[in-house]
Length: 446
Image (cartoon, rainbow, N blue to C red; front, side, top):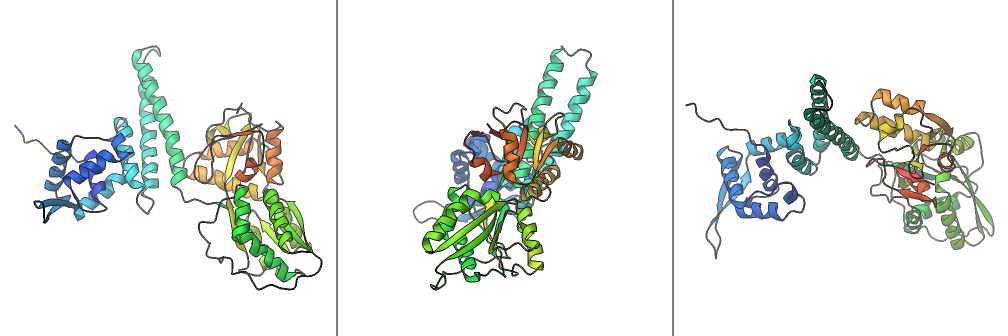
């Protein structure tokens, strides 16, 4: 009788993940697993089973023990990862499960620990699991083709499994978007170098970036700045008081998505500076940048697309390095109320006969929409044919984000992609989720 061969470790490597942060005693490992809100839902072995698995991991050279003395208690064995254990654990959380039966337990455990790494391990795991899942679909399809009648029990069971795998693939697509590097919409502001009220214009920029300005932006749905890009600096300390003109008008060109927030900011700024009137001009970012490039008189420019600052810097109308990112935003997919087109994933945007409203190439919303569709293709939420079908469904290219939203609200378009702040400003909508850059979902418009 041949000796029994040892099987490779699978779910037992979860225990290595618990020990990875710090050495632990066997009972501590069991308690951590038992009391963890998520891990205990996925795997809850008995205490004796945990001890048995730890012994096997130690015998395999993946764990090592040291003896710690305790003043009032007997010495205890504390376990820590060996170099081989770290290699084995890293390989485990990087590779997909090979069998569907392991998805609901082992894969989710892998994903839990992969998310704790500081690199792209979670994204790589999701991408590899997606490839494996597509292979499962091919195999299930081939099995269905061998059956002679679609009414057989075997056919029904295989079709159920096929639908389960398809649903899992859609969920993996959402995970891929979540773990991809987030690229937020960056709203940028700068004073123009040829402003006749240079110091006042800079004060307006400083106020937008100040705590008071940020609070107003937050009330209107804009996201705070968690990080300051390398090309920008934190708002400086308030400058000393200056003798403002008795009467002056400050002309501010701002992206239309900023309308309500900047109206409130302009009022607050005028209140602080008696005699100062802030004249606001709102339109699509691309249209405003084009006007400034052709000589339009303005003191301040606030855009939804920071790339539009570059040609104005090159033209000398904005000083290099003076532009600041002052707020962030996201994109959302919006549909008509009750979602009659049944849009639930990016792939649904490719269905024949759909009428889509998007921003034009010159508009900031158009720029970011193309970016999100490219990212959706990169992570597998769309293939190249589906992405092309989405653009074939575009019935309206609008010059600004509010016009895109208007097409959906009035019923001319079935679906559109807009900034989350513009969706928030409508009064007859029902939200179900954000789509960019963190997750996929759909919003409904009246």
